[in-house]
Amino acid sequence: MRPALLLMLAAALPGPAFAANQVALDNLVFVERVSTDADGKQHILLEEPKVVIPGDRLVFVLNYRNAGAQPADKFVITNPMPAAVRFADAGDTQPLVSVDGGTQWGRLGELSVAMPDGTRRAAQPADVTHIRWAFQKPIPAGATGKLMFRGIVK
Image (cartoon, rainbow, N blue to C red):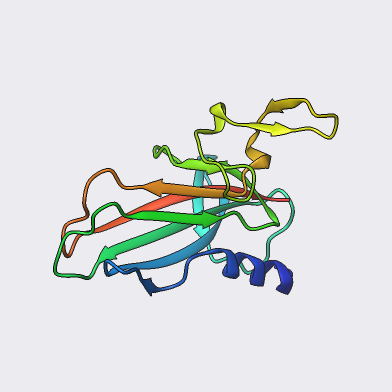
């Protein structure tokens, strides 16, 4: 992996931290590789991103834990997309996304992007600048969970 790309990936993920409501965040990033065994069966492997090249699929994993004694209510995780990575998907979750640096939020299919001539076009995955998960229910004290999203190295 180019050192600059590794630094951009590391800087873009939330590090271990405690929010005001004592929810700890931790993150991991993997390269998704496909391996074929002797029988010709394909397996998806998640590997440490030692080297990445344009087109590689990355998997970002965000682990959270309510380390407080009370439920964490109205908790929100916002994650910027690394500049060197294009958003691909967020698995089964339905996060809100921004295509304008975090000013406006919505589902990807609801957003549009301004064109230089003043017209607008439908937002595409490559336009995503930030991803946001807003928890609808309080996170119980001691509870843990995991969120993920995928990106493709530009």
